[in-house]
Image 1 (cartoon, rainbow, N blue to C red):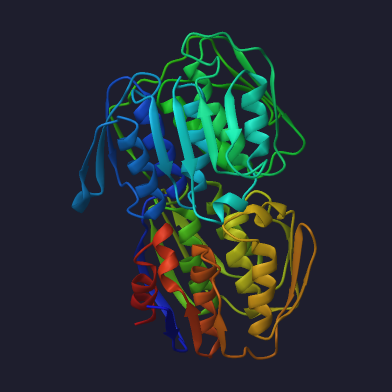
Image 2: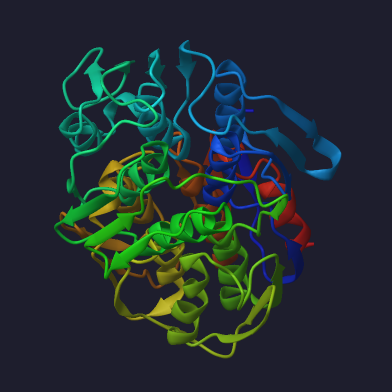
Length: 431
């Protein structure tokens, strides 16, 4: 199907049980593969990005049993580096697979090729590669300097090798580089300090990484967001069973629907006990005037009156910030999203893409290198939305149908990256 036509929706109400978090799913899969013991993962996300990680683990010699109908995976860990020493991996546009595997494979003492789709080959990776090379890794660019595809050789980084400390890495492009290094460093044997230069973006995603490493037996000390210390002889050990919580980024679309189109809409799978930063999107909706309630594993939003535009820093929640940009269409007054430079290196250049598509709906949009300002129209226009092979573009612009106009979403199947059943869940709330 090349497009999906969404008819105007007057009211959204109901309950959504969220799919598993992509960020948590792929981190847990990697940690379980590197750990000693067998890990049962419950609530694993069923989507393309996770399939790319699972395919890679299979190619690298990690046995994984799937119980798909129960969203369960049983991973037999390697107790260290990957057992297969020669592999060619195709990782699509899955940054949560590509970046961490790059770092882990640099410690695995083998010969590996990593490639993806064209957009992945346009997403910078030099900061991670430079940090790995600084400690002896053999990581080469197979095409254009600074970008995938990559070739990784044995280098000097083997289990038990000493690592010169500290390791410096920039933090102002993508937090995935910091997370990737942190997850790989226990494969060495020395005390290691990782120093982040510049402002670390998307800090909550690094917090997820540290939380999950701790659950697999590796406790990283840190000094704010600039220094991380991995102790010598750290080793991953399976926690036995671990549960993937719901995807807080995916929750944002449904919570926004409750704020815009009456509600109440409740999401189940994230709440006050969540380890994901994107649950803070509920605070954004509250600041815009919506009524928000929550429990340990649920959040509920309903419209309380007119929404109002805001001017806010979205560095902590860059994915959910896209949803805020569409909610801005329904607010009184302008909305400005600041500190979102990381959008430029995501699945597409999201600042440029959002500006283009919001304008189609009648908004007046200004953009800068790290900000976006949206002035809502008096009345939305019907539009055909291009999605740029970016799952979040497709999902957040579905909300435009709440503005009394028909919306055509091109390439709706791109949501399979993280939420294959998104449009069915959306339609259920509309019904």
